[in-house]
Amino acid sequence: MTLSREPAVLVLEDGTRYTGRAYGAIGRTLGEVVFATGMTGYQETLTDPSYAGQIVVMTAPHIGNTGVNDEDPESARIWVAGYVVRDPSRVVSNYRADGSLDDQLAADGVVGISGIDTRAVTRRLRDAGSMRGGIFSGAEAGLDPAEQLEIVQAAAGMQGQKLSDVVSTREVYRLPAEGDSLGTVAVLDLGVKTSTLRYLTQRGFDVAVLPQTTTFEELKALDPIAVFFSNGPGDPGASDDHVELLQAVLSDGLPFFGICFGNQLLGRALGFGTYKLPFGHRGINQPVLDRETGRIEVTSHNHGFAVDAPIGETVDSPAGFGRVEVSHVNLNDNVVEGLQALDIPAFSVQYHPEAAAGPHDSNYLFDRFRDLVVARGAND
Image 1 (cartoon, one colour):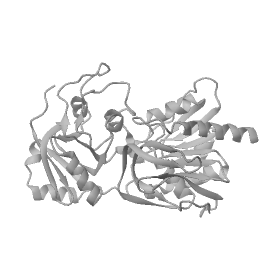
Image 2 (tube, one colour; image 1 turned 30 degrees about the vertical axis):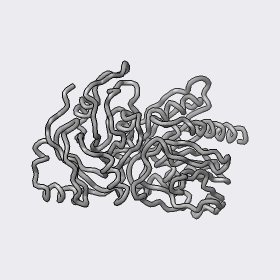
Image 3 (cartoon, one colour; image 1 turned 180 degrees about the vertical axis):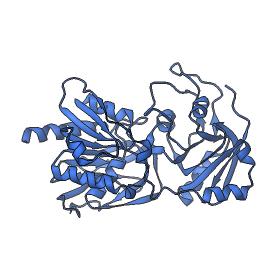
Image 4 (spheres, one colour; image 1 turned 45 degrees about the vertical axis):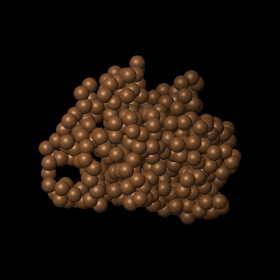
């Protein structure tokens, strides 16, 4: 594998510039520049639909040594808008590899940059917050710096963007339960990951994956025993239709579990607000407290928005769905990481219990969902 010697530059909306070499596809890309702290699992990160619209900066310095394979992707393609690394590996040295990361980025048209101080970029984003940015490589790197900055500053920000329509399935598809079936769980695909679906089928659910345009009538026609809202990219404040769908689900009494974007939508459905975090949580080492058990979990994250709900008290849902508690809290910054409805069968977490990549401390949440559905069925 021969790494590119084409010039490249990363430009942030505040005018900060970092020069390096092209990595992956050659050209121009724009997006929200964010950093991810995971030292492993770059292929799972790249194929996570939640990263759509974002230029991802890897804080780990060495990227690409394990190459890419056909087993680890979390979706059918790479979704990041751009990729920023310090030291790309010149060789692939893992027995499972089917190819190099550089070649895969190029094949998927992902413009990247290498050879820059990614820790310095991370420090800048931590100080100023996530920003719009652009990677310009090849001939694009030779554009006038003022023109490059103007292009970046004219790009759309993440707030107000609805990206689920970009990443969601266009057609309903089904996956059978492993072993005896409990029944069908309707999964609204807002950017769902392969691991999530696998963990649901392992718990005995027949899975019906639905487009993000699905109506409540279409969902009910599947006769589901439960509903799941997936992770996904974009601003939860721009997803009023999904909030209305979820409120219909909650009113109908169907058990509900949501993760990441699904947690934010549950928050909105219950009547709480959401807000944008300065630089978000992205990585596989976030400490989260389960307030019910007192257990601290190391968790995998990818989100730039959070739910605005009171911590440490039981409150009435502003939307009329009974009592609600914040179930999980981030120990780094006290951000809400989970919600538990006490009078209806619904809960959610902000992080990724499927943890691909990441620790499996929170995998029990899929069991909790199964137990909720089984208990609900026994009481009906």
